[in-house]
Image (cartoon, rainbow, N blue to C red):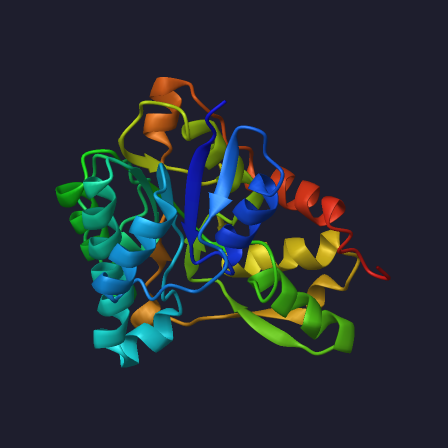
Length: 284
């Protein structure tokens, strides 16, 4: 029986590592291309990898996602997030392979409080957001068999926001979190589960995959501390934007709801489930 071959780029990242664990012993899919790192910004390296691995599906998790770093290193940000996506989309089309490309709510500027659907026009204001939108454009233009998945405030794996908060909590250190940034925390578990469902579907285009509900970064942090058994008051409110502006990036999972293919849970319920699943409570 033929098993579809999947090449996951950025396999050591948050979503990539969750996908690797999920597909490790999968009976319907096999992972290829994990025995070496491929520089997605090098089109010759990508072409060579494609010829060796011959994937049926590429899941592009490779990204330069540190927004502050991207602001100071624009060329590098566009090289990874846009040029890398271009190379993968172009080479995957040669093999008639499907490409699943991970993107972000940062393609929207955050100046409006309304939820953004897949049909709203992106207006990124950061280098990170602009570079990710450029990557989306390349994927859409170069491979018709594409699925672009946008999400928000993704957590999971090592070195994520939860890990950072708990490192502070274990030391009893006070810290701050923004009250002027609003979005929706979303776990890598949910994103990976949605991707798995979409692998054999003839569904293409853009899908939003964000948990339901909304919160400030401060509310999110207090929820993490409370659910793990630490003092919520370790975190205090802070303002990060100038002139009292509030940055709001909320995604409406409209395509998901129209097709009925998947339903994202409320962010609080998912955070609680994730913390319990990974034994992140105080004393563990």
